[in-house]
Image (cartoon, rainbow, N blue to C red; front, side, top):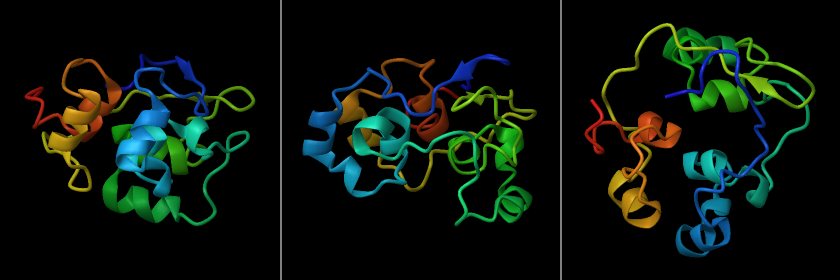
Length: 143
């Protein structure tokens, strides 16, 4: 689940929930800077932080939102790649997370191996964890 409405989140902060060095040594998460574990758990450690609130110039935010509704669903892609387009910008360098207007379907992210993620960082242990709800809600039996 995303943070409550109006809560500001520093998008360049590692979560502290995992040891980023160990996670990188085990799964090489910094090898793919756009992978969900990288941007969710260790953006600072892996060096993917972006200054201020700006959309990624390599992403057509309008097209992605039109086809995948990323802004309304409050997805990680919306926050990391299209924060300005989706209206998530807060203060300097911060992102204000807007509540989703509709619940996402109960499916796991097909790009994530939830079994490996759970075995490595125990993603299913905290059912309120954002990563759990975004990437592995079905595997972790949240929905």
